[in-house]
Length: 434
Image (cartoon, rainbow, N blue to C red; front, side, top):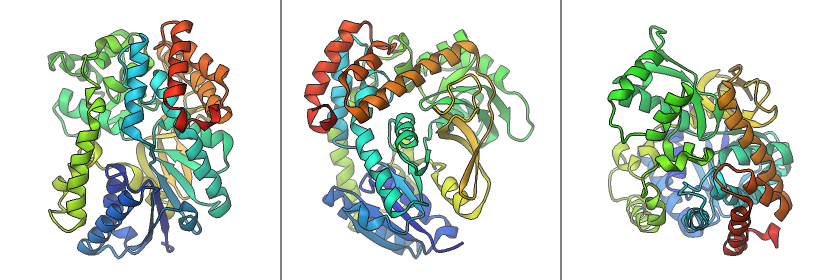
């Protein structure tokens, strides 16, 4: 493999940044690469740089490590650019939950869909496009691997407004696979294969097979799920009963795409977001101690500092295959719909299984989705069109239209109240609307 340079933008994120670095350094094929860490927060960048240097020394990875707050210093010569960015994440996330709820939009997760997802997108699209445009100038042949939310929407913005090679990565399908295997079937995650096309945070499991025998496991899922604790994923189970197929990656995400989804959620399910600052400070103290040389670097210690307990992401498989033509299979990627789901809008961003080869992604055709499920998703794809346009142009009318047709917003008057209050509350991060 030729000398490789990977740039990690948003490296200071101890959940995503640490996770990516761990996977890269534990891969012998990548030992000795150049790794450039980028973050605009100097304190977080300094902490992550110290930690990465410790990992590099302890694991004998031989990485050539640099760090900078200016991505334009890091991008020249890059082969892969992994992006995981947020701005004032939990402060804004609280507003994305509380303001729509106050106006009667239901108690939603506020991340990828619904009114919270709209404002998350409006904040995230401009800096994401800035990175893409810098890549066009400074490393035009590099791949943009997006790990930021709202995943589908950011990939759509990159697809429409830049020429960079891009792909969106989310652990969601792997979480669904793990849940069905362990919670429902009593198997290991690697014992089952699923095909789960859809959109990010709202995919639908169309097929479940035993990896060794090829046996169709859906009949067993439908039978055994009735014996699982009824408090576990009640919304997804209701969807299985009503539509015949199980959605993922979890109730909190799926509820953002259904007008009635929030009614299945516990009243306090998103309270952790409202109290996240305290938890973040505790994790930063622990991370700083490890960066300074205190504490273990074993998987359990590091995994406790990452999202989803440090489950291995498909990011590493994507990077390796793009570089060495490994033709590795991944359960889900976010890519433009080139007929992969035949009854959803073409060129919209869909989440599908794929094979990743040398400098190319080969999406797998999933055919048609059931009409009812396709209708749910098609509406979301049209909402995405409006949201991305509003994020780029700062047009209030377009943003309002996206809210009015959103199934999680009860009526146009409510939509307007939410929009007006949110634009004021988050104005500092929404300069395109000024």
